[in-house]
Length: 178
Image: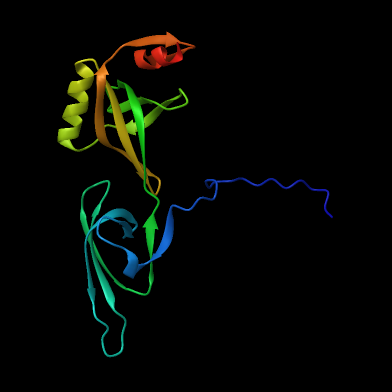
């Protein structure tokens, strides 16, 4: 054995994959698929019959969940496709900075400051107007393949904060603690 110490630098995440394999023939409309390394929501699936010497083929038409672009792919129905792990998380909106980043309150009381305002004009207007009016807003953040984006908004009433143990806590949470 060697007396040397070995140090390993980890430049990856905890080993969780960003995608999982699924047979192309089992992917349906409304499901998710990876096309051209982009997480997409399937809007149309058509399956061709087997040819004289080939496989049945699935034709996928999908919309990128982050930029809204339409993508298409044709895959043999018996082959595996990558399907992204898509998650949706709700955060309470605390602040909007001048450079377009939002400050969000996580479940455990920490802040998340690495998300930009959405590019969708209607959603952007709703967030800015609601925040300016002093409403208590909850944003839904969709995550897939290392990307995150605000995708929805909920209004949970007028903003009413108190400082509790050095973190911002809404009035409703304070009532629940009593």
